[in-house]
Amino acid sequence: ANGDRLFTLNRAVLNCGNAADGAVKWQLRLEGPFWATPIVAGDYVFCSSGYGTGSALLRIVKSDEGLKAEEQYFLDGKTLQNHHGGMIKLGDFIYAGHGNNRGAPVCLEMKTGRIAWREDKDPPGRGSAAIVYANGQLYFRYQDGTMALIDAKPESYEVHGTFKIPGAND
Image (cartoon, rainbow, N blue to C red; front, side):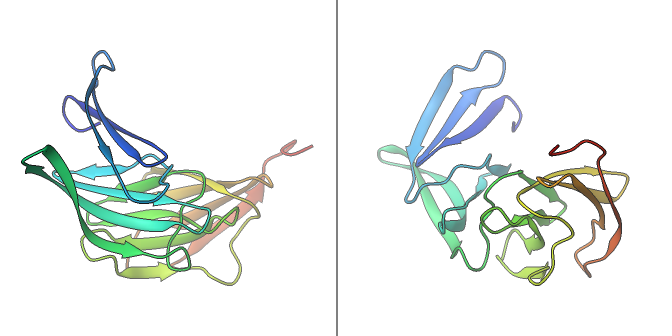
């Protein structure tokens, strides 16, 4: 949500709705199949998807037809694709899990598309990862039941611990 607006993606359509009642205010067709919940910051919308699609930062601007999306940058699927689990924007950075069913922790500078860090070799868990933030830390919950505590800082990637959730995936 952004003020009174709620943004969702449905494949290649960015929807902007009224947060109070869900009524659609406008829709905008995008290039490519983006699925994850977008991150909205002012006139900018960051979108990402798995299936090899990648990620894009768009700027929503007025046009003769109403609104249009101006692509600021595009990152291919090898650079950043958030398949499942969502993304979190903290300050100028976005934290997410990268890769199809991998959940490899990644930190991206939203405005530039620069990858601050990414764990490519050995993610703390297996499968996609759901991500939440609390008390300066990122909590990654993997499909295999692994929980990982990761610093929410763009300077470096550091895991502070992992454990298996009892009974997960039994």
